[in-house]
Length: 184
Image (cartoon, rainbow, N blue to C red):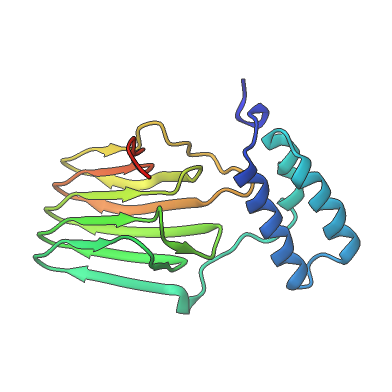
């Protein structure tokens, strides 16, 4: 079964609807186009149903002011909980590691670019459920890159995390949040 034939979730439909509404407020779609596309998006059953709805809309590219740099020489860099994720994040650590948890973060864009420069440390990135990850531009010289079962091809309406850069002597792990069995 191809990925386009896979069934979409309510969250996938909602993300696509939000992207269409943003395009309407930017003047890219008129009222009739918005209503037609929203009807299709909210009743979509597969990714193929959603694909054509946003193809003609521009993808969000990072603007110069949307870049945040995080740097550490000896300590670990950690971001988790409720934090604003910029369009582009540049993270470098010489002797420490990085731990970025995007699962509860505020993410206002459909694409987040993370550029990593690690010398002796390792990195862990947790992406929200349903997100896709592209690590084709990341290399590890003496370590490994583990994305387990995360999809890498873009999905309509899904958050796309593009990771580039390097880890000289460390590894990079990218995963979804762990499921908690005993929560109230």
